Length: 232
Image (cartoon, rainbow, N blue to C red; front, side, top):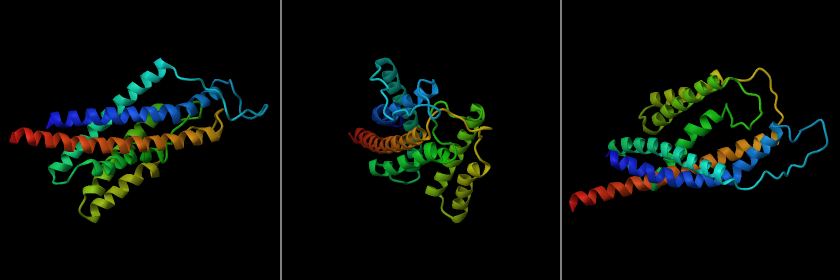
């Protein structure tokens, strides 16, 4: 069982992480580098001459981009390990798990890790005003944890009590509210911040769908291989 979990997670996470990294390099990183030009003061928004919205943010940096790809693959391998472990638990309770079902699992993962905390604590570009990092981390982990429990209750709960508890868990962190800065400041244009948040969510959704698809596929394939080995 453990070998099946680790093998499925390794292949699924590496494949999805590689694709996610390429999507990030093309869609997200240029926006991030553009924002850094304002953070460092190289570009100034308001109070001066009009600045072109189209800036040269440089080309490929083999070291930076290579490390980014490697780190993203490692992160999504970790995500895949958690997802496959949950799939194994679901299968042990009689639920079918394959590539098509994995897509739903991936969407659930995106909702838990990205959308639930991002609904109140949105992805941020460099230089924006922000509350204490530790306080935001505590809130983020608490929100992800409650969202994970809520999604599990929605998917596998059998009565309105379970679903009601799930609704409370989903709403509670946002009713309490995420830590906010005392004042709103920042040199980066709001258009760049909005584009960054939108693309971060979009790439995150695509990556999680791929993680779920690959995890379900490899989990099913490894199960079939194990069954064939036992009958041989």
